[in-house]
Amino acid sequence: MSTSEELREALLDLEEARKKEALHRRMAEALLEGLHALVTSKDPNTMFTRLFDAMKEPLEFDSAFVLLQNHDGALVTLTTSSSVFAHRVWRPGAMLGRVLGGQPVAVFDTRLVEEWNTQPEEVLGAARSALHFSIRTTERNAIMVCTHPDRARFSKNHVTLARRFSMLATQALQKLESDEKLADLEKQLETQASIAELNRRLAESEQKLSRAKKMEAVGLLAGGVAHDLNNILTGIVSYPDLLLMDEDMRPEYREAIETIRDAGLRAAAVVDDLLTVAKGAASPREPLSLNALVNDYLLSPEHQRLLEADDGVVIETELGGDLLNIMGSPIHITKALMNLAYNAVEALQGTEGGRVLVRTENRYVDRPLKGYTEVRAGEYAVVSVRDNGSGISPEDLERIFEPFYTRKRMGRSGTGLGLTIVWNVMQDHGGYVDVTTGEGGTEFLLYFPAIREALADAPSFLRFDDYRGNGETVLVVDDLEDQRKTACAILRKLGYVPHSAESGEKALEYLSDHSVSIVLLDMIMEPGMNGMETYRRISAIHPGQKAVIASGYSMSEDVVAAQHMGAGIFIKKPYTIAKLGQALKEELTK
Image (tube, rainbow, N blue to C red; front, side, top):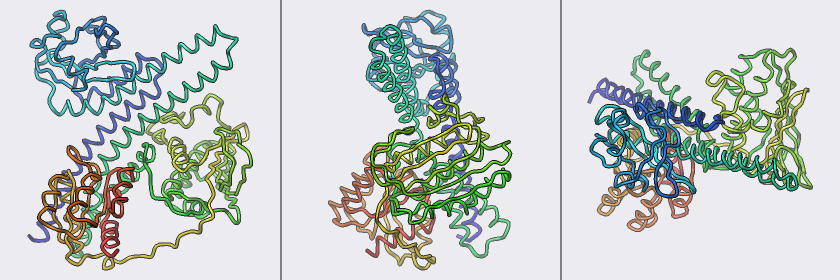
């Protein structure tokens, strides 16, 4: 195949990847819109109405309603987007029984289904086809029904999407339950003045529980969306690297492909923000200096763009001498610093003489420190970001770390996740956040547990020849065809001989008759066994089998478990040629 034919095929692959990315982006936007409705809506009817609006386009329905199961087993309308379905009672038969059991059901013609035929003609006329899926909490069983006046409107793809949205609808039902509990608690507080202090503590506990459920919903969905997008971005990031290695490429092609690659890298950075919000988004840790992280951020292109956007703000630093080191993830701590600096500059817009001070220092806390959160006793390296703006109101201060809670216009000044990322980074690092605010400005303080361990040596620069292969065989195990295709193309360019398997089961079949130098193993594969179980069974066939783990998620408990069994380095999708090549070379030379 000639170079021009290879280039044309690669460009076609990139176009297909862009289409898939656009589909996943629309899905992600719908999920984030639903999450925004879930977090910000106070009235239950408004919450479900906005949730229906978010789900309407991807699920392609005309009307929707939620049926709640009573103690006698009957299902009654909880909320609906159309008055036709209001105040209806349903008796579960075979079909609704399957739905309550957790199986989504698409009905092509409602007139052929027992439960629907018991409803009035106006209901049947408005809903000739229907999609049903279960939403349940520990206390309630419910069903969400999406309808359309035409026959056969819902397909297998709609059922698959319904499984994704059922989590969102379940969180909405849980929020409704939590709000009902809070409403009941408020009535008790009004009538039980003698135990007011106890009830206040109970109310705080309920609010914390409600906040935890919101964060859990954001984390679970953000993690799923980020995983899907990272899989798509692998092709958009990796194929341009392959193409750009062609020294004879025409300049106009090179510029276009570099633009595609840079856009993919920027998208990957946004996805990494979602993973920071997601629960369980662990990352490798190393000894760090907060002073070095502050200096690196202040010299970064992101910070320079921030200064150019508002050149009236002066940013100063006071970096403490002999600062204790911390153990952490440099990427995520830098994200926290970037978000705090961005918020501080935003708070000073229109303020004459605006100043931001970034300061680091050692602090020893000899007794628990009461602040925004309680800081336990111990040694800390502290970084603070202070502005001289107008401060934060008490009402806003209570909610500033909640996802999507912002006074800025959504989409214009960020996603509403900036301070949520700060909060999650500190929780992930076992640290604490304190906030002080008033008319003289606002200061955020991040307390990181200090360590006495020295900093690691800076990694040396590697040339392409340093991580080129020598004809070793690599088995690529991934459930997505485009991922296998991308990985094999990179491996051939690196000098390896690639083979591929579409599942853990297929990998075991291949390895029962063959051996390979190393396995490139995806961690999340559906359906069938996941990466951890696959590696466990591979090890039974070939003890000590070398492996590199790849995933669109950040490092998880399954990754750690596989590494304890003998698997090697973990790399996160989308990976570049250099990242994959270095990981393979390091494992093969162990």
